[in-house]
Image 1 (tube, one colour):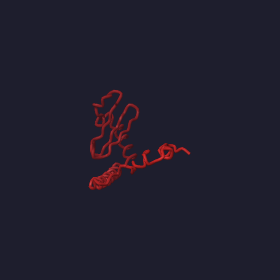
Image 2 (cartoon, helix red, strand yellow):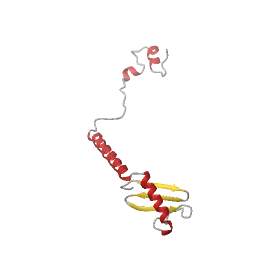
Image 3 (cartoon, helix red, strand yellow):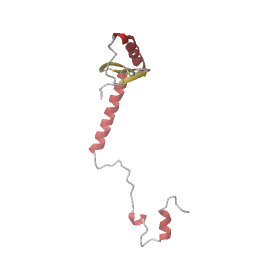
Image 4 (tube, one colour):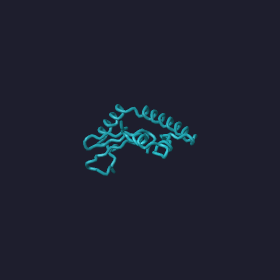
Length: 123
């Protein structure tokens, strides 16, 4: 889990991960499938890392995305608190049932009550 958006670009054998709160990560997933060696600081991969960083900056506005996420989280917390504050209100669908008339009883004619309980209704 992170406090900022994370973005990943996979191109060929290279995988680049960007997060404003963390240093960049660059892996050669063919030579290093376990992703243990970060190539982002390797001078031999500086131009590749810079190209990936520029692409990430061009494709995603991390600050704007983070603000939208935080706003959404605040809204959901307000709604959750409102729902939790009144436990007597149920949001579950609970249809009203009248068992006295829903099933065939002694006071009913079964020929009339039976077809009402079938779906689709019989003519």
